[in-house]
Image (cartoon, rainbow, N blue to C red; front, side):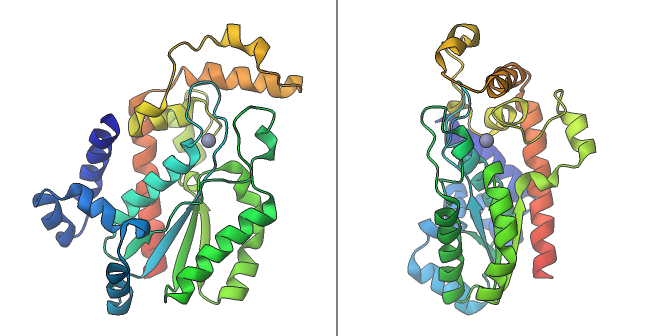
Length: 276
Ligand SMILES: [Zn+2]
């Protein structure tokens, strides 16, 4: 599967900067086994218990994404898949100090409900799910949590809830979207459209080309033909939809690789500061 091959490529890049123990695992041909190690949901309770009790595990990333329309050509899981990939690659680099919790795969997306297929949670439902995950982790002895987001609609509610989360949990809880890694200069340098993160356009399509090309489905997409059937009522929103489709054509694998690399470097650095 191409996803496996590409993930291996990214794993190889992550491993180049990983600590000695990780290199040994990679040399033993256990690339996937190592990726498994940073996924909380693939760990056994024994592995988790030993990691937390030994003090080796020091921080858990909680990825938050969405299941929402990504125009005509990208899979609806894009935001969840992209934020989880960035989280895993950074966690691999810092293995065994960092684990990735099971991603929250449905976010706050009422603004896309006029496009078919989008799933949305109410703000309070979403925040309760994220909080309960953090509380579960704290119950097991986790003292540092980084909520890492990959969907625009989740940003404000999470940012506004952070103080409340900290107050209730009394541990170190931080929040970022992975695109906080991108300064205006970086966006200008890599994105012809001058936009990142954007939505289903140049940036996200480039990300998908680099990380999971099997989630891009250009075949049979003729936007001119399809736009009359989309049923987007707001003319401004319909115009934007068309703009996304046009800008998505500017995507390249190289742009995606560069942007993913920048996000992983930035995230690993951010976590290192939390662990210092
Ligand atoms: Zn997206």
